[in-house]
Image (cartoon, rainbow, N blue to C red):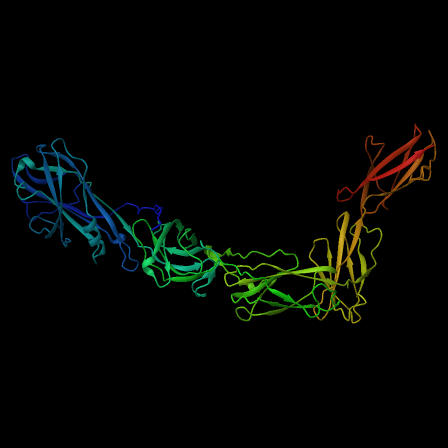
Length: 604
């Protein structure tokens, strides 16, 4: 057995409510002395007049809150605490504690409840009064709590040999207490999962690991038992005598938690059954129903065979017709299905934790890029559109029942271009300014019923085509700089064309012009001269331009307001000849700054 120390909490110790407390006196045999607030006499004693008395003490406690038949709650342990306040002589002495019948009337010497069982004798050594005396009442407390009345009635007295001896008489404190702990055994575990497969729905799944996680939900009605210990048992199916047990600590109750089978317990090819029970540190639940699974960590050795009639391997296929592929297991009988990809990136099977920590299983053959064979080892047909024009490779591998993959087959062929015709891209493209693209099908396609248009990595939008296959789409680019617009056509037969990618650049820098000092675009032309004032005009490429900030030869910046039409003019008189640089950027009414334009010019 593989084990670990328990992390479950011990049951809390709670005080048991006292129902009654009284003492009796043989000298006044019909008088009851209930609920005394001072010292309680015990044994034989003399009063101030020298009259002899003989007394016993009776206490009852209500254990109703410590047991419940409907939930199985019961007393685990109980303790009775009392103490002396004085004694006639401090010699070694004892007190007997008896269980009595439950009193039905005020207790007197003559009408004392019948003694049922001596529960124990508490001894005191020689010396002063023993203020702390204790007797364990585990069995009596448990029996009383489980009874219909839930009451434990006690009698404190001296033994027959000591009771008449006034030298052994004593006084006890009225503070007589009982404490107990109760517990409800954990409920049988539910919601068992072998890895991600629920035991309720899938009998004996195939698992591709030797250390699978086993999930269960443990239960306990006690509020203090938040964490439980799970004890797992696992054995080869049909051989329960080969049982192995291991534990998982700190499993939160009423929430699914998993424990992995330790290494060395399982063997490839085996079938195993398992069950679990919960422990709260005091008691164990019943075992859950068994659950079973197969272990298969051996991968299929043969790669699948891939063929296509209309896209033969190594050749150019027809544009506009989806490729039809046949996938076969290559004589591997254990193949359950196939996985294919255009990028050789095969997603790894996994699962997530759902409500209450339980695994959420998704049938992998409902995911893209997978297809289940009609029977083990069977062939399948898939119809696909290649991702783009040019060389294409379809990567395929087979999967067995445990999800183990085979070696990968690479099927290569060539796809002719079928990208749509796109016109209408303006130059330049202005920020936040709508423009319309005209879309038309590639001449090689028989029919087109829609287009997908995507800007950068935004969500593609679908545009319906007219009867002749044409369409239009209006876009507005919200960001400065370069953007990629990707357009693909879709045909009724499922064909998706190759992509037509257009690069659009949104220039938000202003336009700068000057008649006196024209821009030097590489010709070296010069204008004006030292002392000749020139006027520079700034014009916007963005809406709602509020101002321009400029600097000459990277000097101090100056900001000027824009006119109602968004333009502005500045004058400048050079004091040196040669090349100069005017940098300027706009700010819109939303206080957004835009790109800087660098205007090079020469002074004669």
